[in-house]
Image (cartoon, rainbow, N blue to C red; front, side, top):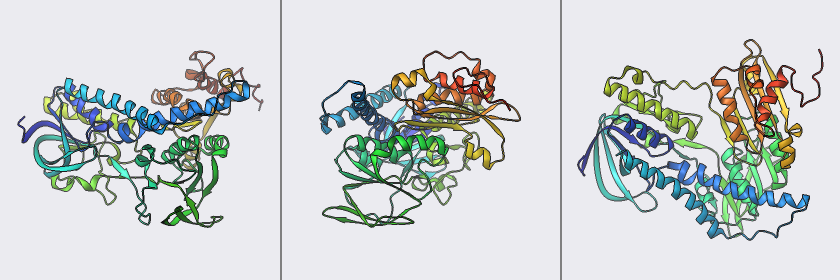
Length: 488
């Protein structure tokens, strides 16, 4: 590869979880790979300003909250002293460890990393305007990559409401993770997972919260019974939960950001020290010159793909946020593997690899709040809407020895089984570590398990995980950790 004009088997545009996973898989299969990434490190939004740093801060918040709860059982701590500089340094150290590991693995695989903003200039050519510094400032340098195949993994960006003024007290999730503010009053625009996770952190650090959501409930997509448990536990964090309410105006004042709402029961204009915009993300499909490569992009910026992640241009693939919902890193990783395997199969004449396809039955979702909320497959609401008759197995954590011992028995585990086949089609968990538990439910769905398969699998005791087996036992009336089932 020359310095000014690179050639490769596979060009990967974007170095997030989907992009670097695709690149590494392609390299492992013997292909020459170039990754173009506009920022200084691999990992994309997830590792640098999303999933990972938010979890580092959520862990700190969880420990602080747990310490407060211990006072009720005889263990008192002094009030915490918060050093935001050290807290930021901890978060940055977590990021650096992971991104440094990715750089090392790229070097081991001989994956070429090219920093800059990539734009297609033809079906087999990408122009890269080089960037430097902590952001994506262009240096004036330009390189060109000639490619046989490409994988677009260019991700998404946070949506900004057009009427919001430009003010440092109005942030998106990236700005919120910087911990530059210590607000007394904070508004979360949008009742989805990202806003509620960051709200958890800021609340534990001392902020009072308001949240505004246009829909009739928080955490859209999750069953309401799961969300009710979370909402009951978290009610003390909030002054207002404004549902079916629009944010219609905002202006910056010396006292804060004055926000105007519209809807039944909407309060008069309120002033906040910090406003977090968490109203969704938009794909970057319109920003990469895709049309020059023959790749179709819709009016919203999404790129349509088939089961092999192939776009309208047969030699170009796309993965991750840019191909549609759900915008989740774990989905992008699997899509990246599929694209890399198809390309390797085509270039190397391996028919088995060339037949690779994304055929996951389900993709789990997790809100890393406290308690966590996790679900996978069909929800009860979806089953009802689709006319699918299901049997529900529910195990309340109030009957879990481990949850009671932990002092956190507010949650429950539920499993849904299709009546016609008896196979599991969905499940939801609310409680501590729900995100760590939901993978077993996803595996059960992928394997086509029924209630006996799950219930007869011996789970270790006492654990939170055994609640999955006990919920399955409840379906067929064999759970001896609950009162006897009513005879019909």
